[in-house]
Length: 280
Image 1 (cartoon, rainbow, N blue to C red):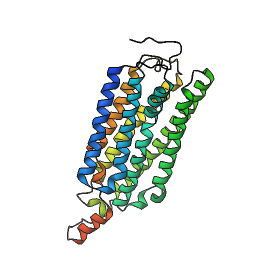
Image 2 (cartoon, rainbow, N blue to C red; image 1 turned 30 degrees about the vertical axis):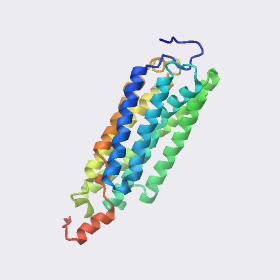
Image 3 (spheres, one colour; image 1 turned 180 degrees about the vertical axis):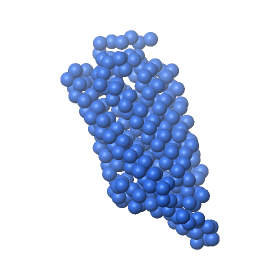
Image 4 (cartoon, rainbow, N blue to C red; image 1 turned 90 degrees about the horizontal axis):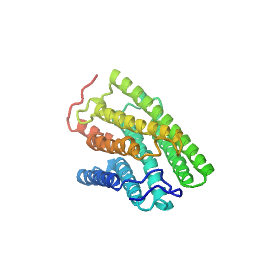
C-alpha cells in the first residue's frame, strides 16, 4: 500500500474500495436518469434530466480520478480531475433545480406570486450558478500545487465560490417558500389540475436544496480548516458528507422526477377536452 510522501498531492492514501463503490453508485444513477428520459419521451424535461446526468457523470469521472490517485499520489492530472469535478458537481445540478421552479410557476400560471419576475428568475439563478462553477473550478485548479502560497490562494477562491453558492441557494429557497405560501393561500385555477402535483414537486426541490446546502456547508468547514486541517487530512468525511449526500440528491431527484410538471399546453388541452378544473 502506498505511503504518504512529501511530494504527494493528497494528505491521505485514496481508497480504491471507497472510490469503486462511488463509481458504481454514480454509474447506476447516471443510467437510471438516462433510462427514464428515454422511456418517458417527455422531451420538455430534457434540461432537467441532462442536469441530473451531468451531475452523476461528473461525480463518476471524479471518483475514477480518485481511484487512480491511489497508485499515483503525485499525478497532477488525476488529482485535478478528482478535486475539481467532485467539487463543482452540485453547481451543475443546481441549474436544473432553478429551471424546475421556473417551469412550475408557469405551469400553475402563478407568475404574479413570484417575488422575482419569472423571465428573470431562471436566468439570474443559473448565471449566478455558472459563475460559482467557474470560481470553484478555478480555485480547485490553483490549489493543485505544491506551492503553499498558491494552495492558500486556491482555498480562498474555493471558499468565495462556496459562500456565494450558499447565498444563491438561500435566496432560491426563500423565493420558493414565498411562492409556495402565496399559491397555497390563493390557488390558481390551473393548480387544481390533478396531474400537476406542484406541492410534491416543491417538496422535492426543498429536499434536494437542503441536501446540497448541507454538502456546501461541509465543504466550507473543510476548506476553512486548510489543506492540513482535520477534514482534508482524512478521506472518509468527503464520502459521508459529499459522495453520500450527492447520491441521495440524485436518488430524490429520480424519485420526484420533474415529469410531474406538465407543459401548460397539456393542461389547457385537458380543459378543452372536457376535463373539469375546479374553480376557487
